[in-house]
Image (cartoon, rainbow, N blue to C red; front, side, top):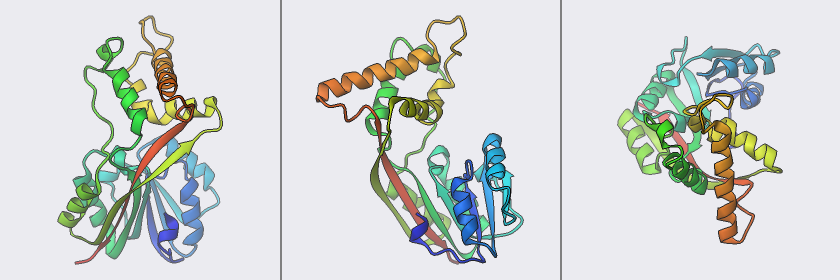
Length: 248
């Protein structure tokens, strides 16, 4: 993503959803005379990012919801990776991004798009709606907004962005072993589901472990039907790539 736009060394960049700061550090190295605002709604992520960039004086860390973010100055670029699909109200988000950008400021965003997670999402939804688990999801709210390019282009145009582009790309995340795969599933993809379930040490019947186990069973069943093990340690992604410029 960062190769798609040359970042000048004196620019001010917003890393929208900085996580642990891995990509923030790359940006900070590009803007030695500028500044990076590293923002995340998760306080633990901010704590880790501060540790990982403790030697960088050009980075400011802010714990905030992106849709309500306030900065002391306008920015030249808003960069965001794998975050925007977690925010349900895209119109509110991109309106806020418009407010935060300088004149001629740009968006450089990638997030999950329509069809993201593929068969993985299908299996999770099947389990959620099953007789065994559905009682825990009575108040389920879909945590993702996997938009189409058409959806995003319409929103950006309505907000006022120019030179708007939005397109999908497909990719696959492959994992070296089952432990890595399960860890990623539990901490990222399954996390919204597991939050609805009782803890594993509770006295209630179905637990988070049994939900994960059911998922793995269904994954194996799927691979047997297809006569391949290719689906066992991979996740199919559909990425939505978004760019636009603030011009009035």
